[in-house]
View 1 (tube, helix red, strand yellow):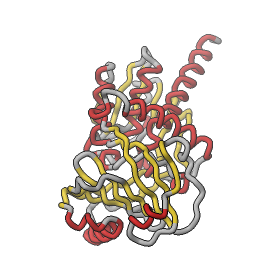
View 2 (spheres, one colour):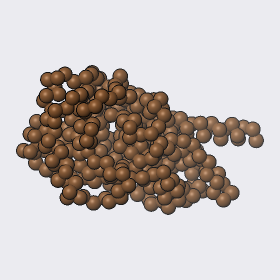
View 3 (cartoon, helix red, strand yellow):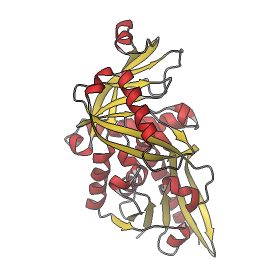
View 4 (spheres, helix red, strand yellow):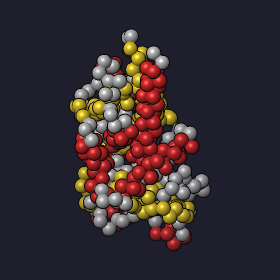
Length: 337
C-alpha cells in the first residue's frame, strides 16, 4: 500500500488530500498539521471566487486552468444537496474603479459578467467612473473545511496533529509527501520566496447588504456571507503581526461605511487577522529531496496567498496529477529492475 502524507490542513491541504484519495484509491493518505479548522488562515477568508492576476505572478494560462478547474468543482457543489453543508453559494455584486482596466481572467467563467450601467455606478458612493457586475460563487471556509475533512475521514483518511520541523521526519514512513504547509514552507523547506500578506477584517451583522462591493482602486470590500457581512481590504506585505490593530479596525470601518453608508447601523460581531501565505509564483511542482541515502518524492502546493480559496481546488487538482506522475515514475523504475 502506498503511504502518502499531506502536510497542512488548510484549503490546499484538504483539497489535495480528498482528490488524492479519489485518484489513488489504494493509497493510505494521512493529513499532518499543527493547525486545523478555525486555527487555519483559510478559515477566516470570505472566499469569493475571483482570481486576480495582479496578486498572483504566474503563467496566465496556468492560472486560467486552475480557475476553470476550481469553478467546475465549486459550481457543481453549489448546485447539489451539499451546498449548504459545504458553504458554497451564488453571490452577485459590483467591482468599481476610476481608470480603464482589462477584463479579468475569469470574465467568461463566472455568470453574467458585464459592465455596470451609469445608474448602477451612481448607486455606489465615490463617483466611480467604471465598474463590473457579475454573479460568482462564495466558498465559505468555515463550512467548506469541515465538509472536506468529513469526506476525507469517511474515505478512510488519517489525521495527525503534529508540528513538523523538517520533511526529513517523514522520509522513513511515507512514500510521497504533498507539501501544503503555506507560510510554514519558509522554514520547513527553506523557501525564502515565501512572505505574509497580512489581512484584517470585520464581520458585522447587516442582513440588508445583499451584494458584494469591491473598490479596485483602494482595496476595500464588502462581502455578504451566511449570517454576517465581511468588511475588509487590507494587504500588508511582510507584516508578521497576528494581533488585531485598532488603527486597522478604524480604517476598515471608515472604508466600509464609505462604500455602503448603511453599514453605520451594523453591529460588529467579531474581528479576524490572518497572514496569507504568498509566493511569486505559487509553487505547484514536484521535487526529489535527497535525505541522507534516501530520496523523498515531494509535491509542493503552496503560496497562493489571497487567491488560496479561489485557486485551492484547481491547484490541488494539478498537484494530484503530479502525485500520479510521481507514482507512475516509481512503477516504471521498479519494472525495469
